[in-house]
Image (cartoon, rainbow, N blue to C red; front, side, top):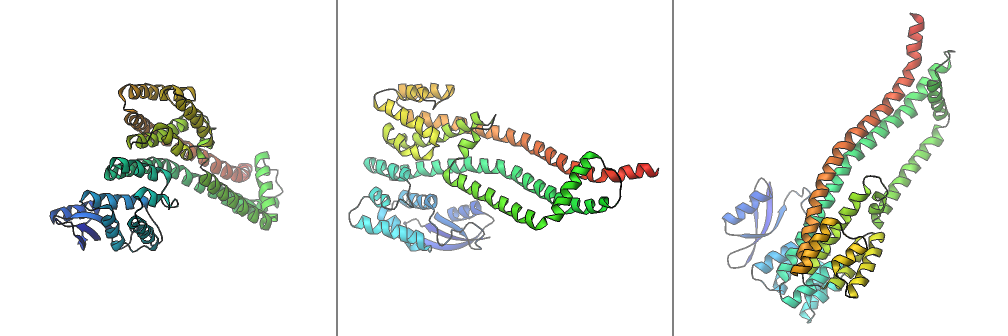
Length: 394
């Protein structure tokens, strides 16, 4: 596999080269052997690791910027180096805009704040806090770690949902094929036999008769139903209402709440460790939680603004758990609230991962059993008249 590499030499010069390696890790090792520090690695074949020409990846931008800053380049020099290597029009335009505004005397935080479509409030906040301490690389590293953890949690949720979704889709497709094609064929055969059929078989074959007679109505109706379901799923995903739906499922509600609290703690912890005050941090994270948690967060913020301890405010408004509450109190006593929030989030993140694994192991066989029962019932009901006929012949 060939990699296009942008790397810094020992004298901080940006160099472009092509390497042959089995994977990205091997490519990085090859760069280290040549005393080069890789900034970007891209697969030449474009097998999914190459950025689209019309996209701007905030995490990739932050990683590349961090590498250049740690190599000793100034912020403007780093941005200029990124512009030189960038081929994507959108990403190039974003960085050129940043350079132009910074050359006019604008701060980096103000420059990114003028492009909210590419830089979320969380990013702007940690950059602004970093400018007060003159420690932008650390802030970028913290943001990259935060995004990596969030993507890891999201990936685990998606992985846990993929196999059940495939099972449901395949099982539903098989059942619909039987009901819309096989059953009507059997119904036409049994209709002319003149034999009395079992009740369940008559009901099933009646459905087959109906489908066969109204196929041009049933097919468009079924297609419309599928489109409606897809649109509704997209709407729920866009509005971020999956947490509210999960909260209504018995056995899942408590775990969904813990998962949301973990995400909330991780975000607040990152902001507090970046030097942002707790009240400001709560304002910034309000848009990342569900409507129910947003109301609780607003009430907790008001209590904290009035001088109430964070642990007490979170406990009073249902934003904590027994273990997290103890860790928050330790954080208040030690003055390490940000670190304690992050540790609480990581604790529950690991627990949620184990729960997701157990949940998947239980749900998958249950779904397979249900689908097998449905398909098997349809087949048995279709063949029951044949068994009855064979018995009468004997």
